Length: 473
Image (cartoon, rainbow, N blue to C red):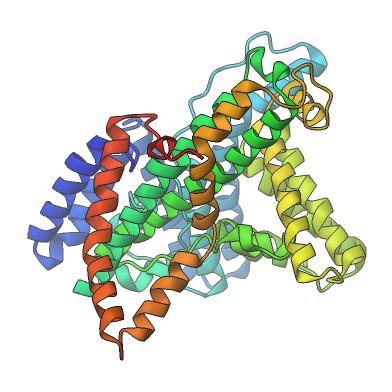
């Protein structure tokens, strides 16, 4: 079940909010836990036991760490947690990848098992690891009640697509949270904005990208030069709008019932450098690797060789986290090299405009590496972008796709900036003293959520329906 589906919007979410609203205060967490387990079980009931088991392991070891007076026992419990959690993640996510490498070198095994990847395992594994590590460091107290930790690890708001929510962020709100009307409205509006991002923008860009730079088949090799560039531009929009949409919806769902999840994206395509991009992109993942890998290894307060090693480890793991394929590892190491260049060669000497342009170009080519798991397809696209293609420079099909999506691209550019937030903030400030601004804010606040929900519903009903196709220049 995904957030952008009729089943979720008009059945699951509606019933959940009704049950949550009617439940007595002392039972609201139990309603939320039951809803979360039902949501998670929708994609594979058997994996609920894996989620519950991993949570039980971390719950027990965190209590051992908190109550033990022996440093050796505390450290042993921490190591056991890391081995157990990372071992399970490696088994489900990377066994096929590793056996494929062994098979390519030694010719065995003959058959590689097809292991189904449990939904959201990367997210809840990292959340539970951060929880136990924070208990070990003394940053949070261990949760004495198992089912409340299970509630944390299974919260349907973010267990599938993030953000990675730290236990310390929600520890107080698990037992003590207040729901205010203003925050409920904010949550509804934020959810509707995310839903519209996904259904109206991300899905439309995905359709255009799949048309121009399809994965698999012979059509990719025959594309025109401009088709490769336009297709990857659409993919660049798609991947940001898709990821940030789910974070918006998760933050909105949490706010509706009193949880305050931290922001996960901060307009990354406005970054002035690659380093700045990673301060803004998937913030919860970047901060996880910073706090639990990079800093424990020594961070930047060490020799240059150790710093380079630390960065290499972090970016190798960042790439590997995104998928069990060499292209993701290459993507991570690509950014590792770029960040070293910025630190040791560029050193902030580029003007702001030039830095922004270079960062966007670097990120753009990074998404080329990210999209294609097949190295032959990756080579075809990169070569084609620089003219090595039988498709020529321009084609009628590229022209058609461009004309059908030119308005979508304009809207996508705006959606990737903070223009909407800036306009709203301007109106809110003016509304204190000017009547027209007060009226504008009132109307926008009343109209925006139902309008976006209605448009999203229409888009969902039309599946690949692209409303911007009717605005052609």
